[in-house]
Length: 100
Image 1: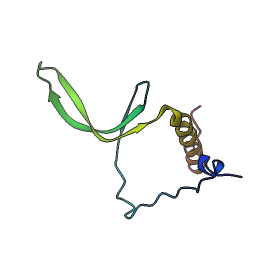
Image 2 (image 1 turned 120 degrees about the vertical axis):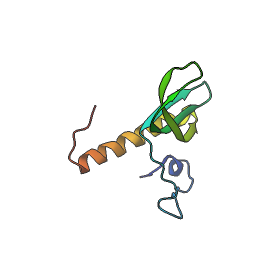
Image 3 (image 1 turned 90 degrees about the horizontal axis):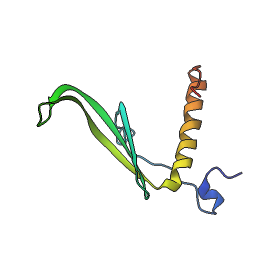
């Protein structure tokens, strides 16, 4: 049985390789999603605790974008499926109920 969409199409499976296990790690505690007719943009941000003020004098908290990915709308169903499956495995491992 094929493990990935690529195998179903007759291509070799992908293996993600990172030279340094911490090289690709970026901490984020906020997510923002935007989309157009051509793509989905997902931004991962880290909240800054300092209070800031804009040009009009309005105060706000800042979340610094640490990473941004852009996906084709065609990949979104697969992305959601993989994320859901991984989250369910995490919940099973940690004995936590899933949030359906």
